[in-house]
Length: 312
Image 1 (tube, one colour):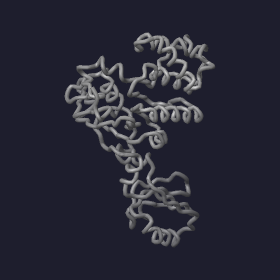
Image 2 (spheres, rainbow, N blue to C red):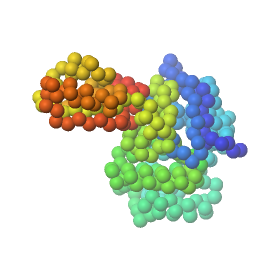
Image 3 (cartoon, rainbow, N blue to C red):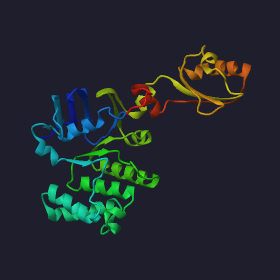
């Protein structure tokens, strides 16, 4: 049973008592895509993943994975997906090889083929030389790579990866990104939940931003940034600007902040066309040390759509 989309989420709702975790959520994931889920803590990302995995049933709407209805055809879905949770929940006292054999016994239909696949994946994730070592001796990056190998062992079509590089150093992060991209080139589909904006920007083909259980933005990282329609301006002056709100009141600016004592950072519409006027205004009262105009980052996009208030 094939479908043009890897995943279809159609008007899904899920509540826990009086708490609505997901409300009227709809989106599609293309086959062979690295699809990112972004959102503040408590926005509904984990609930969304659990709904797609069949670990939760929608109270309204429908979730299709490779054409299968997750609510009624859960067993068919389980054989086609892999999952790397945020807590990799590996068996710490077992070796890497033993962890994979345990997974194979649960999910692989042919254990002879699984043995060959295991060697291939341990080489792919650069863990073959450490296959006999207890997992408790592994670094964070090695554990995440082993968890990815485990999720790939039964050769799923779709892999769900929750916070791929959480607790992983820079070298391990780039290694994991490379492994994910290589698997995508081999035809795998990835759904990634992350709070790392660099990861989302670098790795994902498209991003869905969720807030309060609803989809608030869906596009490529570049298009999300382009849709912001303002520039980010940083100026350094001597002495520092004392009352920035009043000083910049004649310009279309917002979200003024002071990253450094002598620096102001703010968002401005059409900054390139107004830069001459801005320089002239600043230079009347201050010595302008530097001015920098940049396009919004993915952090700016995220804050624009979800707000700046701290979340629990």
